[in-house]
Image (cartoon, rainbow, N blue to C red):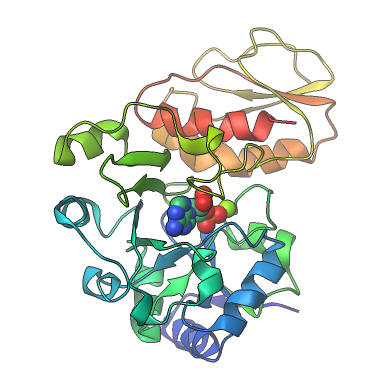
Length: 317
Ligand code: AMP
Ligand code: MG
């Protein structure tokens, strides 16, 4: 059984103690619920990969309470400093050269000579990380390949009995995973789009490598598998009509008519609201017994890039 604790001072203190001893703790960040393990503890990291069923070649993001703690194991250049100043705490992950002497578990970086790091802004995450003191690896708290959790109930639906405890602070704020930016080479590149947009990053460090995200280049970011974030029911994107045995994931003020079940990501057409609702609504529609989930087209720019990325992965059979 996995213990579920309120994210109050006592709950956070207990969770920090479990992490320091090498246990597994799910906790809220502003993006999704993460599954934490102490990044300097080889056995804890091995347990984390096992609990998620995560392939060993998929490296983890390390979370710290303050930027100064990231400098202990990651090498920052001027671009990294400027981005950290602009967006931390917040949902931007930087991939930087690893300082090997820092003692990060080999498995946490999947043996790479780079490391992914971020400073989250959710108050529970910040307090927990501050209490732990060291870096905590925290991928999304779901079984590998499944939809990321945005509530403690989602966490338990996926990994109950496989982790020690979950800190419950209610639904998260952003709803999709952090933007991952690779700064380990001269050409900065987005490996995974998120709510910190391409335009916001370019405003700080200038033009990014034009290309696509790294889904088509697995060695650059081993975790960016084409199929990910996926419900069990097949997904059909850019629907312009819908059948009675289909569930509809709608967007905007004019949802298609005729579906057996409909949920609307944002009746007002607000992309931030859509991001917050995306995973919970995919889970809900996955459970209704529809033949397929039809998804209406979303706008493409800004946060639409991240939403489109998650939907395309969820639709990849
Ligand atoms: P998750 O923790 O499941 O949200 O995924 C973390 C993402 O960050 C995955 O797509 C990883 O491939 C990526 N990532 C983590 N560490 C690195 C790294 N050192 N180099 C490139 N990508 C990384
Ligand atoms: Mg994940």
